[in-house]
Length: 323
Image 1 (cartoon, helix red, strand yellow):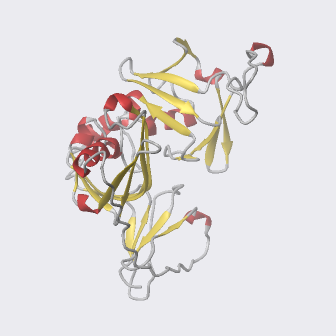
Image 2: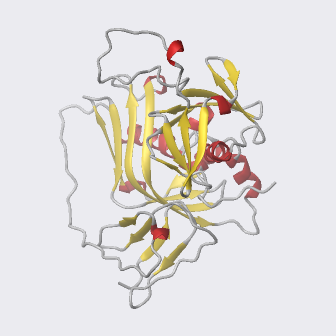
Image 3: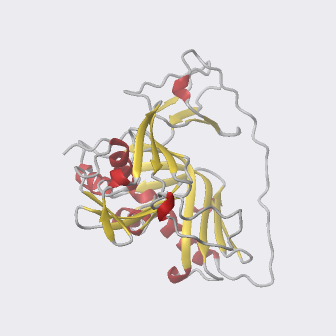
């Protein structure tokens, strides 16, 4: 296929296929991300670990079946599309200055619905979302794979919002002229999840001006994190609590994981004496590469300042901060 769009997820590296379907992507270094291939009329292909291939690879695309969107008619609709889209924008683009500067150019492609049985707002898209970030000067194509906002009750109010989650593949096009957005991009980078994860992986939290707190007391991260090399990643595992310090709780179902297995799985954070956030580990183990990309994607949850940073503050995975 000629003209297929090929890119590395979360980066600015892309190519188009030639008349015989071939392409070449040149990057300055290995990036632990997906290779994404898009072509109209075919299913998008996401190739894991593309740098693991040392020879030419052949990619086959599957024709996309034509699906009609399901139409659901209810006697009473809890919320209007306008109300649901308002929540989608805030939880997808973010509530920060950068998030507020973003505009979704093809918002008609967004499908939203509220499940009153689970109190979850869901969203999907019939095509990649085209997001223009005026503040950071990026043109972003976001292929939305999943989006959920969970509420405590049948409400879209911020006070009832419990947590939000979104996933997808992204491609960044740099719109800046002569690095005109550098200061604004650096501001989004410092104190962001990407910045924090790079600091944890490199054990440079003190140099990067991070303070960690557990139950209100400042702690040393090296007493809570074990960071080791693992192939192209840094393996970060939580330190387990000594047996003699574990509280005794009876009556818990066996299916419930021991909440006292680790010394802590929630850490309050403060960056440079200012912005406050928190990070929660789900299972106590995560792999982080040099760019701050982590796996598994559902292992970490962010709250506070970092929790409010969404697509509007996203930077390419290969972004380099230079003082």
